Length: 451
Image 1 (cartoon, rainbow, N blue to C red):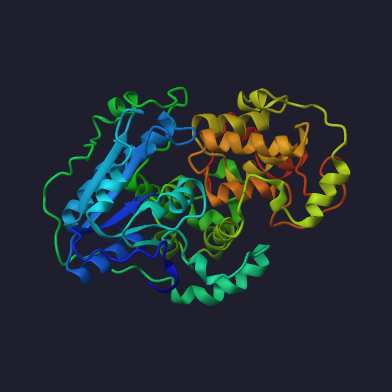
Image 2 (image 1 turned 135 degrees about the vertical axis):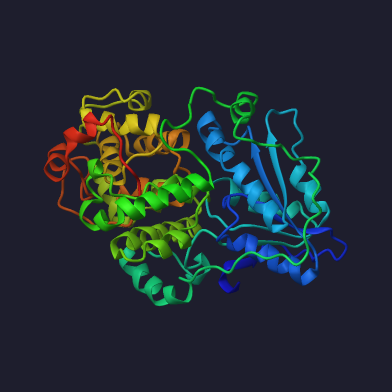
């Protein structure tokens, strides 16, 4: 696996283990999953079966009906696909504080080795730092999120123009269909004692039984799971790909892929999408160069919730303009309710509230206006992160955090001086009306695709 896999501890492989455990944290799929491939390869070498473990807990930040449903809708297909391949599957739903919190440790205690996802943000990054040291068995992290592995870059890249030539040079070595998954020893066909059965008919009841935020409903239009991701990709290839270069910045044209939630939750891989959409260099620029620039930033930046990550020119211009008069000024609660004076901004926020996404081009406007209408830059950053963390199906992702920080100058360049923004790029409603069909988007109730 070369640059994709790295050891997370120095513990040895356990020769008496019953299986190799794949701890699925982010890449919630069977196909085109290099982390699962690594676990299968290791298990075949050890003449052992593979156990696929996927957990979902009530306690992750902003746990809600929206995120739970999106994840749970993928479980039946995962179970069916793994059974056909002879791989064991334990899906554990921890619903409340009294439920066991040590299922991973119990499964790892019987494993010859553990393989998990190498992911630079959110829970996977925290778990790999805090949980793995408690395991007494070899554990490996595998990058199954990026096409060109994150480890190919030894330092942080500061803009698309610095990482682009490096990615293009390496891409021919990685842009290939993955081999089919094939185990040499099948897992015994018996359910794990920790397994939570999930069917299309019991998902609502399972969600209702969890101690989570039931005030954030599921997306009104974006179902979760592998099958939904494949259907969305097929729709994009047929109806959007040929128009992407010309119309992707026109939200009402629906020419973007709509795949960002599925990429974030791992229901589809960037590699699969790139191979299917390689006829559009403009789309590959976003899917590969821009997305993997975000992963690179996350990998080499300890905190993505701080303005200190910004380039020096951006921090300096904010220092000089921090006392500029803001009018109007809205609170986080007003932003959350879409209660501003701007009908376009309110429509973008309504799209986030109801669908769980915002069209990528309008998301830039959404963020720039929060900067303009907040009393402080740090307060604007907190508002954007909160709204993404709580509502966005593609939030809590390297792309989400870097897109937010882009509103403050990350991965951008200085522009002509303006109030509040200084030399940070600004966006105006007049510019949006000139470049996009604002009225059509508002009339649609704020519906667009992302990525």
